[in-house]
Length: 477
Image (cartoon, rainbow, N blue to C red):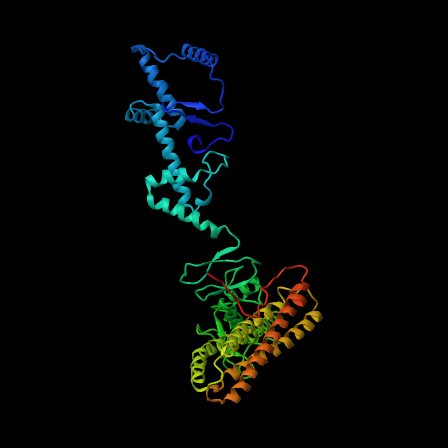
C-alpha cells in the first residue's frame, strides 16, 4: 500500500534537508564517505541527470511518459495526455493524485457498506488492514460527516463485536448498552425498565429456551391457526374452491357461486334434495383421508388453544395486577399515618414483585410445555410413555405453583389499610409465608425443567436462564 502501510523490517528517518537515511548507524570515518562518494559517482555515470530532447526524439519522450501513465492506470492515450497536460507533465504527481483519489474512494465505499471496523487493502488477495489514521485523514477531506461516522462505528465496535456487551432492545431505543460479567445465558433489566434475554434480545422468557420462545412468538402472530380452523370447520366448493361453512344439519350445502355439493364427500350435486338424501347422489362413506386430516388438524388446534388460553390468562392477570402497585402504595401511606409502631412495609412491596415475577414465569411455562410435550421438537428424545410421565410430574408442580400465585394475588388485594396493628402482623406473616412458598415452588419447577427435562435431552441442546429468587438482575450504572 505504499504510504498507507509500514514495514516491520526497515525503518528510515528524514533529515532537515528532506533526505532519507537508514538508522542502522555506522562509522563516521572518511572511509565511509569515500565509499558513498564512489557509489554516487557510479550512479551518476549510469543515470545522467540531464537528457537532450531533439525534435526527432520529442515524440518518443512524450510517448514514454504517456505509456507509463497508460500502463499503470489503465487509461486510453487521450485520457492520459489530458491528465499529464493538467499536471504539467509531472508523471509522479499524476500517479500520486490518482492513487490517493483511488484510496479515498475505496475507504468511502467500505464505510458506506458498513465495513468501517476492518477496511482491508484494495489490492487483490491482500488481507492487510488499512491504517485508521490514514483513512480518517483522506476521508475527512472529502466528507467530514463520513469521517465522523467512521469514528462512531469504531467506538460502537466495543458493543457490536463484544459478546459480553449488547444494546438494550427497547423501542424507542433508550441509548443504553448492557455489559455482563458471567454467563451470557441470563436475563437482565436495563435502567430504562426493559427486561430482556441477553442471549436472543427478546423479552425475558424463561423457562422457555430461546428457540422455544422464537417459535411460540411466531406461532401466536401467525395465521396458521386460522388456516386450521378453516380446515376443520369448512370444505372447499368443487366449482370455485372457496371455503364454505356448514350452518345447518342438512348435508346438502350451497356456495355463493351457486354450486351445490355434498358436505360428506365434497362432490358437486344438483339442488333437489331432502333432509336425508340428495337426488341422484350417493356417497356411501366419508373420505378417509380428508377425515383423518380434519381430525388431526382439530387435535393440533385444540391443543394450541389449551396452552395459549392459559398463557394469555396469566398475561392478562399480570396487566390487571400491575395496577395494584399504586393502590398498595396508597394503602401503605395510610398505614404509616395510622400505625405508630411499624413503619417498615417493604414486605408488601416484596410480595407484590414476587407476584409479578411469578405471573410472568407461569405464562411462559405454558409455552414451554406446549413444545416440551408436543409431537414436534422432542418426539425422538423420549417415548410416549416417558413423555406422559414427565408431563404429569411437570403439571403437578406447575399447578402447585399456580395455586400459590393465586393465593398471593388474593391476599394482596385485601383492604389491609383498615386493619388493626394485630391484624397487620397476621397479614404480614401471611404475605411473607406465601412469598417464600411461591419462591420455593418456582425454584423446584426450574430445577425439574433444567435437570429432568432439558438435562436429559441427547439429540438437541436447549438451555434456559437460571432462576433468580430476587427476579431479573438489574444492571447497575
